[in-house]
Image (cartoon, rainbow, N blue to C red; front, side):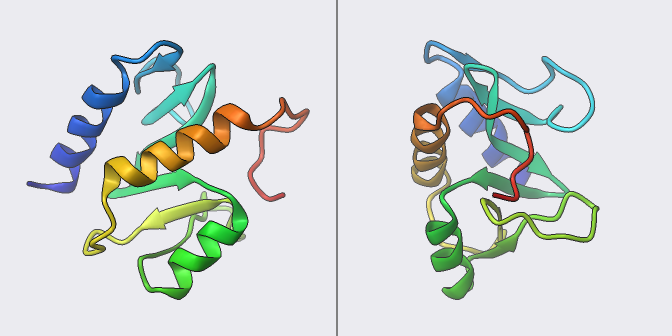
Length: 116
């Protein structure tokens, strides 16, 4: 299954839940994103699954070689965003579930950036 097909399957799995918005609902940054209560938790960018996770979890996954910190073409990797390597054995649905829980539990922030 291609990365695009894997992401489509992930979207299908998660959009059946209450409060989840599928990609395409907005333009600009996040147009390929899956959101919970309006906040991005997973997106598909440049052929990779990108997830918002706690910084220690991102550090762990990067250190284990499962991906890199996501850079939104601004030259600065984002501490709470992981771009999962396409060859990683980490399960997409499991990581997306972690991201969903992390984003849903986070208090609303004034800035929408991910470099905390």
